Length: 637
Image (cartoon, one colour):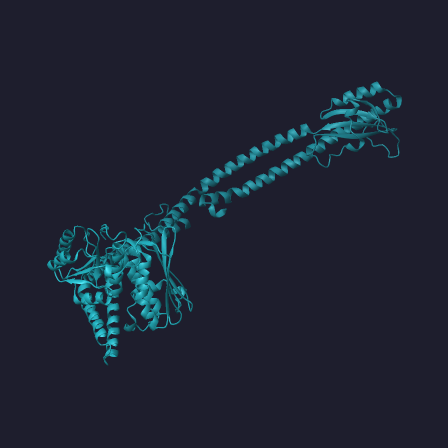
């Protein structure tokens, strides 16, 4: 409790506590002593009176004078503090009494003699007995003590009241208490007068120290006398001056450092933003040669299947693939950091995404003697299919890279409002204390030597940033030596009309408008039997001769840009009499252009599996329902 008291309260407590204790002790001792003295005095007085009456009553008892005994009792009641009296026989029978016989207590409740009771603070009234003996004294001395062997002729009992004594003691106690309180008040005033200067000075010193602790060293102690306390106040003031000067210097230095750091930070942020935007803007120019090289190597592999140079070509293809992967990671990360990505969420079937992904990575898993499985609870997801595919490609490629035995599972579990896509592996696992670090840039747990052949360490950083961009929560569970599980939570979408999962190639006509040779060869390899139209005039002639195509695949580069390509598609729609489903292949990032009708945009470079998945999806949509009726236009992507 002392720690909660201030300096003023402590001084007053130190000054008054002993005084209060002494006052209470002295008052208590005096009151108790006064009580004992008053009780003893009262009982001595009543005892003397009782002996006198007993001496007088001896003759009346011997003569049987009841009237005389009654008069003696009435005289006894005139004595202060006596409430009742009675004469008894030696055997205790009542001879005469001033109160009814029923009011006289039993013998064990009557005190023998007139000594004060052992418990004087109990009942106010007590009965005392005075024996009456047959005595013969040589002198008429009523106060002489009889011999002990003189026979007992009767007893005088009186009821003594201590109420007057208690009232007197109470008055004395109140007077003593009043005097003590007066002395305490006088002592309090004296202590306040003597300690006022001390309290004020100490309060000022405390305020100065408190202001220093709050970094506001501007207060000073005003009472600085020549005594020891005044010298202490002067010392505290000097310390406050030094602290204030130091604080001013620190504030000035901090402001200067903050200004410098802010300028450096702004310059670094501007440089990083400029660099990110440059890479984002130049991503097509940087990717296009690598993409063309990849297509050339793919064509070369197909043509050189029986050539002795095939092993070297395959090695070259592996190198080019690693180059493309590293370049894709670097440019994707730059675009994410530059904030130039534009998400385009729409309903996407989970089975389409995961099946295409499994088909793409199945050859890689087989080459490592791993089992790549999928377990999909089919549902529709509300997400950007391109960005979702990019996340899953990174996760599956990482799972296959770090798994040597067992396999990889791609699973999709549907919930009430969200679906959870998980990539499980039986790889090396990730220590718990590093499960957050793996999502940081340039972190490769298995590549401390920074071998560029093992990548840049941006894959999971891209995954995290892309998941944040899509607002899809991402989490990781892993045990060393057991494997890992990356989970992505994706909101569900309202399912469109049920789609047919298969289609007959013979019933679908695909029109290729101004596409390049590599794209044509790729689609021909899939045995989709497309028809090539190098320009809009040829396409119009084909529609007039062959009828309405099921799907149009147009290359914006072959039509001198996106705007001329859209105009060409408008002419095809007019010739067909309805909007035609179209897939536009466009170089670089997805532009901020709203597409009308059932038109979809695919940014180059792309993976062949992505192109195949989009074609299958669009053909599924167009083959749904009655084939004789023209398919209705779906909303623009």
